[in-house]
Image (cartoon, rainbow, N blue to C red):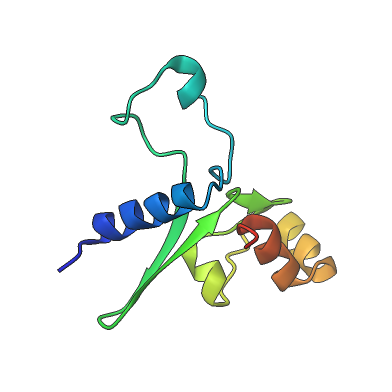
Length: 103
């Protein structure tokens, strides 16, 4: 049976096979880092007792709004009037599209 870490490693392996670079820049190659360094890939993880979904991210936020895993199931946490005003003017799906990785 696979662990969540196994699933992440399998996704990274598939992405490498597809010749897709990590969704964000990494200093690992410039510094000569080894595989013991943190992965340059960033994911949001959603799971239930029946399934697990990993959502790769290209960035943590768009504008003033940070997006965590719950954002991908429809719950965006807004902590300030600035964030509320931003979301009043911006489509939530656009925010998710900017944070996620394009297929």
